[in-house]
Image (cartoon, rainbow, N blue to C red):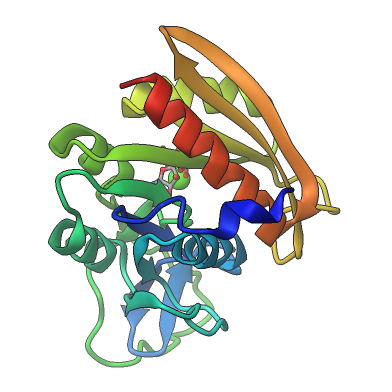
Length: 228
Ligand code: CTP
Ligand code: CA
C-alpha cells in the first residue's frame, strides 16, 4: 500500500461510520447483542481521518479508544444509532455501515431486574429494529457502503443484500473462517460494487484491518467517482 495516500485525499469530505455492536436492553442488567469488536469500523474511521476527512464515528459499546481527530458518538441501541446517524449525516456525506446492528430488540424492556421463577424456561418477545443502512440509502444522497458478515454462500448473499438495500457497494466477510473477521486484527474482504450497471468484484487483503481500511477507502473513492 503506498503511503502517499495518507496525505489529505479526502480533504473537504464528511464520512459517517457506524461500528461495533448494538445492545438491546432486556432489563437493567441484561441485553441482546451481536458479536463485534468494532475494529474494522474504527480502522476505517482512523484512516479516513488520516486522509483528511471530517469523520463522525457512531459506535456501539466496544473496548477501543476513539481514533485521533474523529468525533465519536457512543450509542447502545439500534434506534439510538439510527438517530445519531440521522442527526449527523450531511447531504454529501459518505456513509460506511460497519456496525453489527441487532436485527431485533425486546418488545418491552423491564424496569427492574427480572427474577427467575420456578423451573420454567423463558420466552422473550422480539420486534424488528430499523435498518439504518436502508434508511440512509433511501432517504439521503450519501454514498453508502454496506458490510455483510456471512457464514455461507458469502458472495451470493452479499450481492443480493446490496441490491435489496439499494446501495452500490458491499464488503463481504466470511465469518465462518477463524483466521479473519471477528475479534481478529486481520481481515479479508470480498468487495462487490456497481460500475456502469455491472456488478464488479475485488478482494482486499488478507491484511491488517488498518491496511484493509486504507485499501477500502481507495476503492470507495474510485467507485464514487466512476459512478458520478
Ligand atoms: N444494517 C443496518 N441496520 C440494521 C441491520 C443491518 O444498518 N438494522 C447494516 C449493517 O451495518 C451492514 C448491512 O446492513 O452494513 C448488512 O447487515 P446484515 O446484518 O448482514 O444484513 P441484514 O439485512 O440484517 O440481513 P441478515 O442479518 O438477515 O443476513
Ligand atoms: Ca442482520
